[in-house]
Image (cartoon, rainbow, N blue to C red; front, side, top):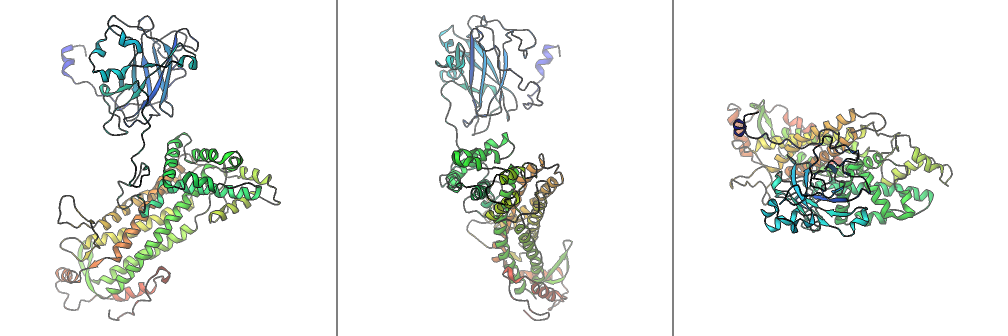
Length: 636
């Protein structure tokens, strides 16, 4: 647009979300080397990029623009070329610790009254636009007053100076070394404020690395504490804590330690148990290790790689060669998930036994009590409360049995690099024990962990996890049916059921008179979420390729963890719900006669009582249920 007046009437185009969008020149070779090593007058400009919480930013891009030593601004094209001509522009990416560096020349003042500086641009994930700041030379304060510096308060002005490192010139082979740390400001830790005028650069020593807020018991909290999954929180003592990241970490350590015990037994040497206890026995140590492993896992695409490095460092030179020898990451992570899921299934089954027993008691207690049967949301015919409760039992007990079957069948994961056991074969070939074959080592590993060993590797044949995910989802939807019926029964105008009371439970932040059915609400939440999580596991299994999958395997991990978490929480909630469920028999009778005015004094409920007896009669006594139900026609 050429008309200046019209241009002033239009708002500026908003900045787009910062890329990088594709890999070209982001970064590019030698982009941070504006001059060659050993160039006369070369200086090093370096520092660390921190977020608002003082945590290093490992994936930022830093650009600098500057004048040459004479104060001339290079205006030739081809800024990214490195052909020996000084262009005044460079780009560097930050490393894992947020560090960056440039080798360049000392800039000169571009005009009288302006102090020499590097113009700095910052690109980082989470910013909606690039940010700008300046890095002034240390002696700029003593030079002719600068208009920008003169407009700032002293404390703000101090943040824009690089400072000289006296020993840097010898260390880096340059004429001088300048340090300029960049801190992205934010209102809360970890948030980066997309406002260039608020971006500051610090010249004093970098801040202490921020740690996450402590738990009440003093241990550092993990990023995920279940804040958005009430009832499935990960606080100490919570039923769902068996699925948290520390549980997965300890399962991986347990898996590695069991393998070392097998090798040590056959080849001689000690075990890892003391090392594992030192690394992850106390909760605080386990949380710290899990945090380090999680942060480093992006480099290799899974958490086993950095964990193995930690184990080898801690094991010492004698044990380190045995750590992870012959295994692959998938052997360890899949086996660890099996252990976590098996523990979760044990908790779920215990709570389902409680729920089944309570449902059977309700069915028996209300076997012949007439109630309004509803179909398609309308009053239909008389039935009994016992028949409704027997319907819950008919879903709960088979779901419990299916979960028990699938969880107990979860096998050890093994196979090595590509399912061919070559690494384990090499270990077995060098074994001093006669007739030691690789599968014998694998069988011994399974014995150590108490896991069955399947006929072959299942790296890409994901049947064990497909079945387990299906079983967990089935439990959630069966529990969801119970919750749905309770939510219908507690509605105003129905009032047939009430959830068990507990201090603070069901409170409303806005309406003090309410008693919300929160147990059923949270169970229904999980019943909605679970099928989609199971579908993710099944979709990943259907996309498995070759001998190891690229991404499909990775997609299973969070889905299985979340699915187990929802199921553990739901089973615990329903057990409590059914054990304390209150039935208002007067409301049941009132609703029956209001919905079906012609039912008479003795409503015809058909064979509902016989149905209850049949269900109770087939109820598995091993689940803790009552003896066989009453015979058909027998009065309650």
